[in-house]
Every structure is written in C-alpha cells, then in structure tokens.
Length: 212
Length: 212
Length: 212
Image 1 (cartoon, rainbow over the protein chains, first blue to last red):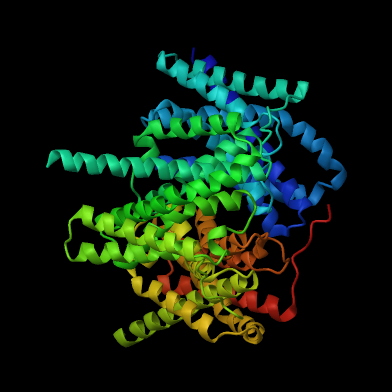
Image 2: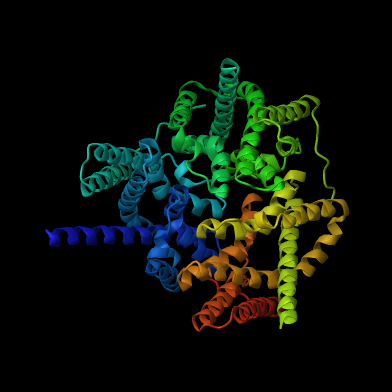
C-alpha cells in the first residue's frame, strides 16, 4: 500500500508543480506583452503563481504560507523567470499558451480542491469552502490582470473558467459530507473541474450572457 | 423593555440587509456596464457587498468574518445576482440607482458605526477607529471600481461620501469616550452620516477642490 | 555609550519620518495629477506611506501595525495632506519630486531593512525575508499607482528601484547569518540600497530589457 500512496503523493506534487509553473508562465507572458521591466515581470510571475493560495491563507488565517514552508518553489519560480527572459521569444508565446492550457486546467482543479479542503478542515460551511477553492484557483490570474491594468480575464471572457472550479468545489464538499476518503474527493474535484474546463475549451462553450 | 430592544435589533438588521443589497446592486450594475460575464458580475457584487467589512476584519485580525458567521447573507447576495440577471434591464438601471441612494446612505452610516465599534472594542485609538469605519463603509465600492479598471468614484467625484462617514465616525468616538450607551452612539453616527450624505445629495454639495 | 545609541536611534527615527513624508508626498502629487478629490488625495497619501509596512505585517501576521502603535504619524500624514492642499501648486511639483528622491532612496533602504528584520525575527528563510523587505519598501508605491489606475511605475520604468532593495536585503540577511550586530546590518542595508539607488539616478542606469 505504501507504494501506491507514495506514488499518488508524487503524482499530486507533480501536478501541483506544473500548475504553479503554468500560472507563473501566464503571468510572465502577460507582463512581457505589457512591456514591464525585469522587476515587473518577476513580480507578476510570483503574484500569478502564489496570489490565490496566499489570499486564501490570509482569509482563513492560516500560517505558514505554502511558499514559506517550501521556499524551494520560490527559487523555482525565480529561476523560471530568469530562464524565460533568457530563452523565450515572441514566437514562442502562442505555442506556450496552447501548451499551458492543460496544466492550467489540471492546476485549477487541484488548487480548487486544496482551497476547499483547507476551508472545510478549518470548519467553514460549504459555500464558503467552495468560495475559498475559487479564490485559490482564480485569484492569481485576477491579481495578474489588475497589476497589468486590465479587467480580469476570468471576469469578462465569457468562457467557463471559474464556474468549472465552482462545480468541482461542490463535488468535493458533497463527497466530504458523505465521509468519502480525501483522495477520492480530491480526484473527483480535479476530474470534474479539469474535465469541464477541457470540454469548454474543446467545444468552445460560452457562458450565457446578461443582455441588459 | 425586551420588546423595544428586540424591535431595535430587528430595525438594525433590516437596515444592514438593505444596505448590503444596495451595495451588491451597485456592484452588479457597474459590472454589467463594463460587460463582464456571469462570473465577473457575481464576483463584483460580492466584493462590493463584503469587501469593506472583510478588509476591516483582516486589519483588526478578527475572525470569523461576517459572511462566515451568517452564510445566509452569501446565499442572499448570490440569489440577488441571479434575480438581477434574469429580470433587470438597462432601463431599470437609472431608477435603481436613484432608489438605492437611500439604503446606501443609511448603510454607509451603519457600516461606519460597525467599523468604529469593532475597532474601539479592540482597543484602537480614536483616529484608527474612524479609519476602520471608513474602510468598512467605503472599501467595497473602491474594490468594485478597481476590479472594473476605474479610478474609484469615492476618490474623484467631489461629492461628499467618505467625509460624511468621517464626521459620523468622530461622533461615535466622542460619545463612546463619554460612556454613552452603544445604541445612542450607533444612532447618532448613522443619523449624522446619513443626514450629511442626504443633505449633500439634496443640495448638490461639492468638496472644495485642490487647484494645483 | 548611551549617548551614541540614543543619537543613532534619533537618526533612524528622523530618516524613517522623512521617508514616510516623502512617500506620502509622492502619493499626494500623483493623486493631484489624476485630479482626485480631497478624499482621494488623502487616501492615496496614506496608502503610499503605510501600504508597504501594513501588507508586510498582514503577511507576517504581526500586530499592532506601525500606525496603530504610533498614531502620531497618522496625524502627521493627515496634516501633511492638508498643508500640501493649502500651499502646494503645480510649479512646486517638479521641485518637490527632485527633493524627495533622496529621502525616498534612504527610506527605501530603511524600509527594506525593517522588513527583512521583522521577517528574520519571525523565523522566515532568507529569500522570504528579502521579499518582505521589498514589499515594505515598494508596495506603497504599487498601491498608489493601482488606485490611480496605472501600471505600477516600479514594474515598468526600467530604472533600478526594487532591485536596489533586493541587493540591500541580501546584505542584511548575510550579516544576520554571521551574527553581526543589528545596527551594522541595518546600516549596511541602507548604505547598499540607497547607494545603488543614488548611483542609478546619477548615472541614469537602465535595467536590461527583455527583448521578446
């Protein structure tokens, strides 16, 4: 059994690290498009990668932050920023954006599940837990766009992103209330979120618009 | 006596709920004007309604948040967002804006009083308490405008809004220091804030401008 | 010995107060340029002066805030706002901007040192401590620009600002790890940060750009 559990743990870690890298890359590229300088590019990369989890921990009053416990991840993102600035060119951008859609979708699910889990473990009610999942998954990108002086993409591009995490979050809450094991809830949340997000990307779904 | 106190409590709750609804509505309409999608509209509604009190509690290090203790309010605002999207049209906007000026003014006073009260109870000095009142009353709207990529209205439209809450806050602090009962300080703060705001709207007052 | 230590303390306080005033002034002038009203000008002044230290304390979970412990500074910044609005005119702006570059550079160093110190004292690892120094020194200006609906200057003007504090922060961390006395680490951090910043201003240094 140990082998399987450790294998699962490693898989989770792998997904989490690639999601963090995907988030950081999306921040880097947005900052480059806005012609920010070296400092701005690193800051936006960090904010996108760690903003969501940090706000969640602030709201839940939990310390230490993820990036304090695992300083290695900070160094990793810093290295990613340096490497990107050395080797990435404009023609790589579109390709990269395509490539990070999948770790991003997986990461959205995983971050949402983490957020919901932390909130439930802190005794929060279901709706609050789902909102914490959303914050963890979505707020990094929101911060990225706010610093770059844009209305956050997550709030205006009419393609389902946050709503996928909303659905996945409720799946987690539901399974938790039926005392399902943690890995089952985690997997279900990731599968539902990333699955919905993948379907939305594939079938080009649009959210119903409010025709005011 | 019980009857009166409970009547007062109910009145306070009624004012608070209508103020929250007024704040959420102002967020909804701003988001609709900016053509945000369904997610953005709900998020801006929530931020406007709960942003001020949440920042105050973060700064004062107080938990649980209002919306964690009363999850019903979260569901209420979510329902309001859905109802607005189903039934509100552009021609309702101007009317709604007129109609919510009054719960908004009352709410500003009440939220300011709540903020001052929490800060004083946490042992903060007078000026800090007044600032916490301002944060509670004004920061929701500031967040709304920042997410919608505007300079916050509260900081640029030259009509007295925050200054009314500033005055009302000092009234609360003054009465508190003379050991006045809580309901008296609350009432005085609401009356002064909402009264000044009402006068400002009615007489079209302008703040003195800085002619640099 | 007492005389020297107290003299050093007074010097530190003097630098800190002039840096706070310099930060507040830069906020005031930015707000005036954006034609904010009286409320907006005061708010942006406060945010610029206290935003960085406040975010650091939020992240490190430390209370009370600087401006709660020393309410006098709040009154001072409020007075500065009123005085500026009474006596400052556009023709003073350029002059003031030149004049505050030096307290600003000193303040950047001192605020960075304070941030690093608080973080190390709270048991944070080196990289996190340096980031807390950056947050303390830079985030006030970032908030100022975000409220004024601009991409933060610190992230886009290609002149070294945050990187000076980054270097100074590592000097502090290095000396701390060799058990150097506090005043030595503080002085070294301020000298390196302000020195680099001064050199950058004098020689018109530019950060290497990312030619994407």
